[in-house]
Image (cartoon, rainbow over all chains, first blue to last red; front, side, top):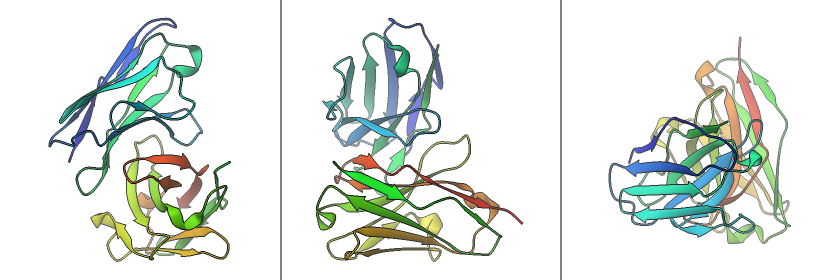
Length: 105
Length: 117
């Protein structure tokens, strides 16, 4: 089940709002997660089950969507939020990741 | 606190095998599967497979059929991934992660595997 993320790169300023899209070729229900990855680091879980924030994740991060269309929103970018974001589905075998969206300054 | 500590970087020749370890702590090892994900240089994330710490079952992506073996030592709370018949395409950072069934909540720091003649 291919996941397509858009845009590939998002160029924004601190304080601006970021909206990242993840579209699935087949429905994944709400079995979608979002991860953040910074250079030289392992991915970090942000959102699971489409809209639930993981422990310790600030409330400026929110997830929405179901079926085939999902959005990760960062309400007001902080300097530490500039990173690559991946979506992942576990509803269909094999589980798959999107190709990532880079959020840059 | 939950931690996953992976083994150090490896350099292998084409055709060789590599084993990456993932030692866990801070939770009951048998309560969560361990999955393996890799990331080629400058590329995205690719699922390799998972290992059931409760019954030893495994599942892996088709492209690794016949080349990957996942095991664990419950006495040391350590999971292992062995990849055989390495090619340059296997050069990547390999991550282990704790599987919550629908997502991965804790990740190891990664093990860089370089395949070069």
